Image (cartoon, rainbow over all chains, first blue to last red; front, top):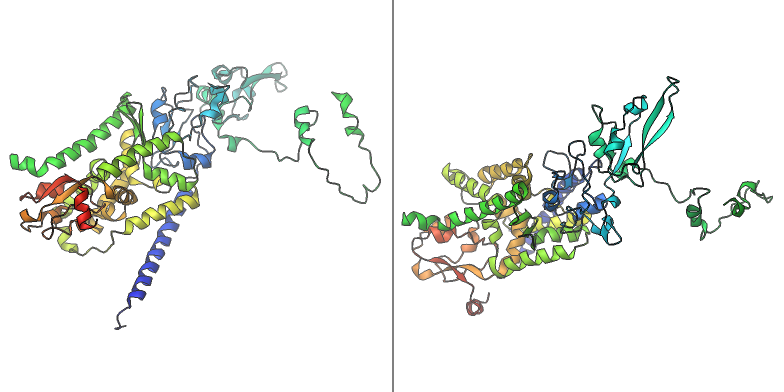
Length: 262
Length: 276
C-alpha cells in the first residue's frame, strides 16, 4: 500500500470513481423521474400532445396559464403530486370555458400545445379539442334515480351534441320517465363544464383523460353493416385456416350477398 | 457613505436586477403586465421577443422532442447574449437561487463554519459537468427533461411567479447544504445550469480584469469569490479572468481597495498574447 499510485492507475481510478458516482446519481435520479412524471389522471390544456410527448416538449413557462382569461389553468407545484411545472386544470373548480380564439394554445413556444390539433380548415376550432372525456357514474347521477335533472346537459357548451338526454321508462315506479344524460365521445372536448355544474356533492359526471376513459379495439374487429368500417377489409389478405370441420367448403349464409343489403 | 456605495454597488445592482425580473414575471401572471411574460424557462419580452432556456432546449432535444422554430429563436436570443456579452452572468444577475446561496455563504462566514471545515473542500468543482452530462443521458433514456423536473431553481422561481407549494423546500435544502455541508456547494459544484453557462459563456466579451501592479495581496477577493479558482492570477499577472466559471458577480471588484480589479471588455490582442 505504501507504493505510490502510477499516473495511469490514478487516471483510471478517478474515471472509474466518476462513472460509479454518476451511476448512483443517475439511477436515483431516473427512479425519481419515473415516479414524478406518472400522473394518468391529469387534464391538460386544449391541443396538448400525447402525455409522453407533452412531458418531453413542455418547457414549463406558464405562458398558457397567463393567457387563460378564466384562471382555469395552473402549473403543478411541488406537493401537488403531478409532474411539476406542467399545466393542468381541475374542472370541478374552474372548467375550460372553451374560448373560440383559444388564447392558451398559440402562445405555447414549444408546440407542446399543438395549434394544428385544434384547427379545422385553417381556423382555430375549440370544438376539435380533446382534453378528456366526460363519464357518468350511473349510481350517483340522480337522473338515473328518476329525478329530473339536466344540469350537465344545460351546462354543456356543445349542448345537444356532446351530451344528449335519453328518455326511457322508469320501470321502478312504473309511472315516470328517466331523462338520462348520455355523453358522446366523438364530440365531447373534456372541457368539464358538466362536472362543474353537476348538482351532487361529488360530481356524478366527471372528465377523465381519454387514455383513462376510453378503451381501444384492435384492428381484428370490424363494425358490421357500416360501409366505412368495412372498407378496411379492402386490402386485407386472406388467411386460410384449415381445420377438420372447414375441409368441406362451408357457405356463410349471413355474409353472402351483402351488396343487396345496403 | 461613498465607501459603502463602492463596496456594494454591484451587489445592490444585482439584487435589483434579480428582484426586478421576479417582480416583472410576477406582475405578468398576477396583473397581466406585458413587459416580461412566462418564466425563466421561456418568456416573451413585450409580448414579442421570445427568450428560452438553451439548457432546457438541449434536454428536450435529448428527450426526443421536436424543437419548434419559436423555441429555437428564443434559445438563440438567450444563448447569443450570454455567449457574446454576459458570460456566466445568469448565475449572479438573474438566478433567484443566487440570493439563497449568497445568504448561505454569508451565514457560513458569520457563524464561523468555514473555520470548522477548513479551506480544503471535499468535492470537485468538475462535478457540475458530470451532472450536466448525466442530465442529458437521463433525458434521452427517460424521454423527459431530466433537470427541469428536479431543478430547485425553477421550483423556487416558478413558485414565486405561479404559486409555490412545497417549492421552498428545494431552496431550503440548498441553503442548508451550502451552510453545513459544502461551501458554495450548489452554485459552485453541483448546478448543471451553472455548468452549462460556464461552457457557453467562456468566450464572452465582458470580463473582470486584474491589474497586478495595484495589487497589495490582501486576498479579500479570493475570500469573497464563490468560484475562487478563477482568480489564480491574483498578485501574479495582469490578466483578465478568462475562466467561464466566473459569474461576473463583481464582488471581487467591490472588495478590492486598491483598484486592482475592474470590469473590462475582453481585448482580442491581449488574448493572443496569453494564448487564451
